[in-house]
Structure formats: C-alpha cells, structure tokens
Image (cartoon, rainbow, N blue to C red; front, top):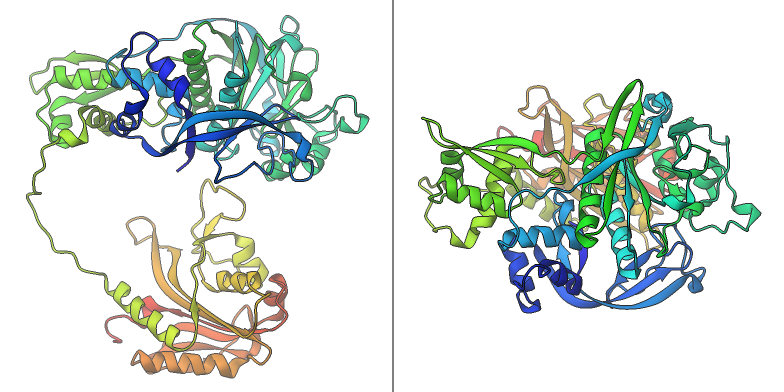
Length: 620
C-alpha cells in the first residue's frame, strides 16, 4: 500500500472552512474512524527539482531524494539540481490503492467533512461548455501504437503557489501509480494553456514515427541545441524516457499530443514538453489523461479535477470535446453512477439494526446521493455514486461504506453461530519436515518471487515454453508476466546475486508453482515443489545424487533414478526421479548456457522435486 504525506495544516483549513469541527489532536483518531491508517505524524523536509520545479517531501529517515520522479534529474550527479524548500507538518498515511480520491488534501477534506456531518450527500462541481476540441488519430487504436483512450479538461482562474504546485504534482504521480499502474494504464499531463494556441484549429492526439519530429522535453534547456530531441532519442537519452521506454518498446509509432498549430504538449505516457511547463505564474491549464481504457482515464481526470477544485474553490472547470472515428464525447463527465441497495440485506450483512433512514444518513456521510423506495418486500435505496469513486462498483461496496460510517467499534460483538476447528494442511506439515531435512544436509533456505517472465523461465534455460503456464493479464512489468512453473530459475538467479561470496554455496527453496488446470475451480492449481542447488569448483552430478538419496531416505521413500535428457541440464549428467514408477522430479548438472545467463563461472548441480506428487498420502 502506498504511503501518502498529508499536509496537516492545509487539511485542517479545508475541513474547518465552514465551521470549526476538528483540531490537530483529533486528526489521527478521526482518520482511524474513517478507515485510514496513520503511520506517523512528523515533520518532513521539502525539496524542489531545479530542472522541472517538481516538489518532493522526505522524512529524516528517508533522506534527500536521489532523483526526480517527474523529469528524471539525477541529484547525485548534479547536487545543485536539488533545492531545499523548507519543512512541512505531515501525517504519513498508509492508503489503500482503491481510494485514490483521498490521496490529496482536497479529496481527503471532502471525505472528512462528510464523515463529520459538515457537508453530506453528493457534491456537484459545475463544468462550463467546451471551447477546445481534441481530434484523436484512429491509428492510436491499432496495435502499432495502441493507447486510444483520452479525457481532457481546461482549468481557468487558477491561483498557484508553491504549496498548490506541490499538491498538483504529488497527486499526478500518485494517480500514475494507483490508477495508471505506473503509467501503463493511464498517464496525466498538465500544461500552461497560455503558452498554447487554444483559439486555433483543434488539438490533436496522434501517432507519430519515432523520428518524425523534435521537441524539448521537460527538464531540458530550450537554449541547448542538443535538447531538441526526437521521440526515439527521448527514450534513449532522457532519464524518464529510459525509465518508461518499455511502455512504448513494442510500438512502431508513438502517441503525441499537440495544439492546433503543431506545438507539442507531451509524448504520453513518457514526458511533457518544456515549453508547456506549469509555474506559479500559470493562470489556466489544459489537462489530459491518456491510457488504455476510457473508464480508467475518466476516473483519473475526475479525481484530479475534483481534488483541485476543493483546494481552489475559485477554480473554473471547462469541458473539452473529444472527437474520435466519427464519434464525439465531452469530458470531464461528473455524472454519478446509479446503484440500488436492499436495506434488509445491508443491515444483515453489517450486523446492525439499520432502517432506510439510518442507512441513508450513513451513505450521505460517505458522499453518496440517496433516495428511498418503499416496496412491499422491503425498502430499497437508490444510490448516486460520485464520479471520482473508482472503488464502488457493486452493492457490497456501498455496504462497506455504510459500515465505516456506522463505526466498526459500534458493532455488538457476538460469537459466530457455527464453529469449526481448523487444522494445518498436510502439505504444510510435510513442507516443514522437508525444510528440516535440507537444513540438516547443510543447505540454506531462500525465498524467491512467484512471478517471473517467459524469458527467465524458459528462454534463458533453453527449454520449451510450458503450455500450462499461467499468464498475468495486466503485468506490472515485463519481468513479471507469468507465474513460475519451476523453482530452479529463481535459485540460479540467487546464486548469481551472491557470486561474490565464498564457495561452495548450497541453497534450497520450498514453494508453490502454478499451472493451468481446467478441472480446478479457478482454472489453475498450485503444486508444492522443493528445489536445491549447489555451486562450487568441485561440484558435480555425484554430489546432487547423494543429496537426493539422503532426502528420500529421510522421508522414508524408495527412490528410483533413471537416466534422462532433461532440458536445461548437461546431456549424460541428468536423471529423472521416480517413485513407484511415477515421475516426481529431476536432477543433474546445469547446462553451461544456464550458467552464462547468470554470469556464473562454476559448475552448478541441482534437483527439483514435486512434493505434491512425491508426498501423496499413498506414498507416506
């Protein structure tokens, strides 16, 4: 879960704007009642990036930042690029990623005012009719440059200072993480509109060739001729371009946002242009959110705009017309979603005597609009869900909101009507014994990641891809695209990380591997495996064979070893392991190509055993 620095003084000003309802001594308890966990209340040092004016808050334990997350400036290489900008009294909040609408002081103050009963019900933000149109290139819907969704808005009558710019940039980066999956699903751009031609032809969101044009990216000096880069050069030379190049790596054309005269606003999702940088002199902004799905970009835009409106009440939000493939939409769309909630079901689920009127008041405190339908079978609520609530998609989410407003501490504690007696799973108890055996054999236990990539799991080992591999639909990175089907690659990676230490090294791991299984309830199953690896100048097949014999002897099993050609192992120095004629594992010396992939210079002998098969009840 992300840790968010919440400025306490500003939060109190916003919450108490209408009347005094909260003081600093009540902050932590109120947040706890609202379901928000407070890590600590502290004083943070504030730093600013000299290249892009990005503002960063760091506690004493964290120390100064090493680089700028916005423009990529390296402060270790250029210490003068980091400016100290004072201190801030903050509450460090351990936030749920599903509630990005309260990551900023504006959203949190709105939530807190409703929870405390200051301003309840659905809040409406006025939006002016559009004056700017954005035309979307249909090529952005193709695989060669796929990033088709866009939502935009114009902000007028802005009043920016050091604190508000900091809030804007922090919220932008937090939304990149929470909703955008580190910019993959959504990325946000904010630009000084006075530096653009809003009265000319329509803005364009289009696909361009990697070397089609040049512009100066954020953080680079416009006076430096070498700073005028092509999109391809930005991915190669700019720190932020290098960090997010993987998002565009498979594309032959890159997304680009320009005004009607061709001035570049940004290259989503990588970097804005230096020419459109927002400063304290900025009085009106153009905002865009681009991404893979319209719902995601709409929610991100709504959260950003509503949070800014709470901090700057005089802010005017103006819509933008988006034209794409003959169709047109207008954003932002603050229309609430409609859900229905059965009152008896809600009361029974929460375990409290709630009627329609009480439930209405609870949901209004959580920011929803509510009306009651009186039906013969029981009362039902019609609930209007705010457009910035990304987490409310089902009636059970409304029940959770009502439970928070009711207060979990107010629920009457009762024993559950049905009792069961828990017991450890057999495989867990067996795994404890397996760990003890390998520890007794002189091996050190490690734990590696369950997520890996096809390159690491198969290609580097020279083994065919397993058709039973479980693939991640929306992986967070290119290194975590599948669930592992073997523990050995992780062990070899661990040996590679520790190759500077003395040899020999003996490591083992007990863990789960995942496989597609149409007969399983979820379509996949997990099998418990154990793997062990030995590295050293005199390690060979005989060593790992001795380990296998000792392990099966300690487990009371009769091992049968058969010569076999095993992918990833040296031919003639590998074998398959069997119990009662059934395969349960493999062992041998790893092939040199596997060692080269990890930069290992000594022989490695390894084994891997399917414990689920080897320790089946009929065998032990």
